[in-house]
Length: 374
Image 1: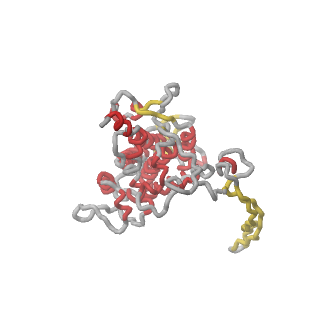
Image 2 (image 1 turned 60 degrees about the vertical axis):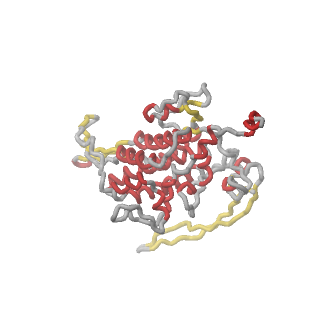
Image 3 (image 1 turned 120 degrees about the horizontal axis):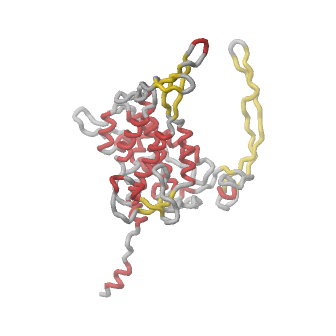
């Protein structure tokens, strides 16, 4: 037998192919708890064995994640709420793009929540990982300060500091516990990552980028105290950014994401993913710890509706016929054209308050053109 001929038929797996094999097999499985109806934080029975109830979502957590939520009563529902918040923010930020963060409400696997995009190591997947990791850190930090969790509380580290700045102010309020949220998110979210390949390193990097952003965007808020409305003393505390602000930051980083490859050094650098990743183009600057990174191009999201990429089809999406941007009909509809329908919208208007206690409104009708991709 001609071995050279036989070897010619063997296709060696590329880095991209190897990465796809471990794509979302485990990393995002925990997202499935977002649609769970189970409110209990108990994921083990009285004998310490895992609970496998009719609620399949509870099985989304691996052994390490179950241990973490068991150690922090109240955390499971906080995490579930954080995923729902991340989904809503993702949809908001991409509502005018071909990929508008589609999700499945009837998923039977956490990874299916965001669909086939997770089979690509692209910008969109980077955004999903960063926003969900950030959401866990954000929600846990808030839960600590509002008393929703027993294992943490406000961050009082700065309460004894008194600083003179145009008068006297001091730390004394209940600061959001961002450091606890960041630490919790790292333990819980990264516990779902498996592998040693490029995709594994990229997921860890984007997870951490999400958490670091939460901490770096903390701002201090103050309340004045004094006689006759004066502000002789201000009590101050540290406050998390709104999650809308977080989403806007990640949207900017999505547009400026860095394409990377694995470093040739072969060293793990004690978990420092920045040092393990290098720009695909040597002329580009290395990614920072808060940048989003990816390793392959995104699909064009112009699917025909058939096959595994059918969910990326933009048919039926509303578009702006007068825009030349990404929300414009030419780009949104992938050159397929669009239909225009004139619709009449009836809304309440000219509302007035009548004593006591009734609000009366008129009905106003407006005519609007709605354009949809073919």
